[in-house]
Length: 157
Image 1: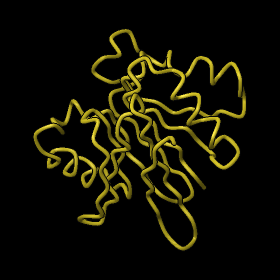
Image 2: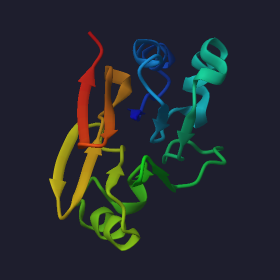
Image 3: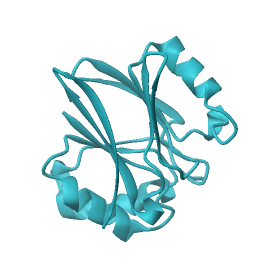
């Protein structure tokens, strides 16, 4: 099971399309962590890939008219995943509020954006990942297998 994780594209729809095109055949879900122009940055990908693109998203601080939630949670392949943009947890100053909320929810993985800086850590029983900004071609993948969880940070070539 693979999640393709994209955040902070800020109007760079072509980067979003290139990232998704590169991984559409090996990803089960695409997770948008916000600041993707309210989902508009996914428009050409949805037009091209249609039903093959299973998109799950949250609202970022720049997504003024988005109807997506600030925080979402899903259970996939037996693992609970919390994802958010991160601005409501003050992630530019500290990850403590985010980690505390993830622990309170009992999740295995927490995904966030907002800082534009790629980040991964396994701490306090949590896989914590920020894919960085898709506006610069950064993205992430989360593989969930019988053997465990692997978080991968990547960049367009």
